[in-house]
Length: 190
Image 1 (tube, rainbow, N blue to C red):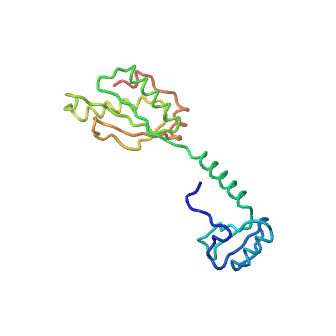
Image 2: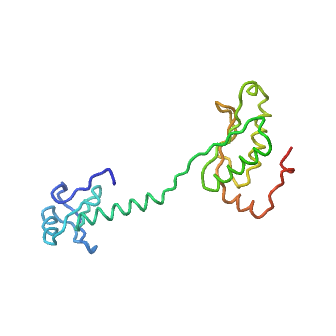
Image 3: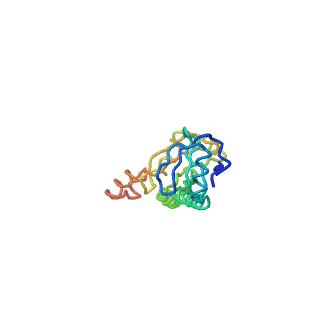
């Protein structure tokens, strides 16, 4: 339900209203008293549907039906909204090739579902003192293994736990990737 309250009948405060009937025809600009009389004659409610317009727009219709239609529209709009999460995959300096391939496939699965993926090189203890260039290359080597078209949303930067990059799917790159054969693991190794 919307947070703003819809004003009906005697709750309407505007002195003049542009009135629309149930079948959609325009009655023109009427005084509040005339608009309420027209609604009462039709046996329906006067509902202020656009209070910010000049003059405000009101419709003569059944309030229960109006609320039902409005809630249906909100449900449809809510169903269309796709929630995208940022998933995280974490590797370490000593992560083996098979584990990296497994994590890369999982990252590709998340990308195909439309999620963003944060790839993080976790550094612990003495690994924090290693050369920055080597550590970034290690993370780049993992990113190359991901078998899905992606673009880098946030480049590799230092994070509290080590180094991280955020990627998101790129449908154009994926279409191009599907046309060309995938590189073998030997081609990926440095």
